[in-house]
Length: 150
Ligand code: HEM
Image (cartoon, rainbow, N blue to C red):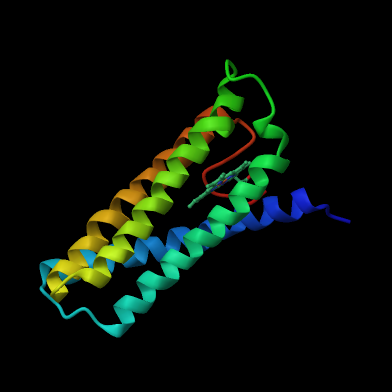
């Protein structure tokens, strides 16, 4: 039987691909639509909202894991524990905030170009933050890999 920690760990581990793929598609679509001055469609809006929701779900899994995981219970002097105690949480929260702000700005935008631009910039920065955080994870914790679910 899996315990709560193991269930959440697998959920958080696998859900990253949902967040990552939605975010990647949203960013590419926003950049292309911004450059081509395309209309901001209902389809665009839905994709951005699904991306936002997926990130918030990942955030909730992460916050609970923060309390349950043995990886957050060790000395800061140790690269591995420092990563899990402060670096992962900080960079991922920054990413979630960027996604939240980007989505909010896209709603306030007065024209399609501005809306695509908000998504392209804010979601783009969030994507960078997530990729950097995962690269740092691979460097700090030898038991984790860039791809692969645990
Ligand atoms: C978009 C946001 C996030 C992404 C993409 C993400 C991604 C990941 C990945 C890839 C892992 C490694 C999972 C594995 O072992 O295969 C992980 C683990 C973990 N994450 Fe996140 N994370 C996010 C947000 C957060 C947040 C906001 C927190 C805390 C508040 C958090 C806390 C943790 C903890 C504690 C672990 C270690 C679990 C363990 O192995 O014991 N994550 N995360």
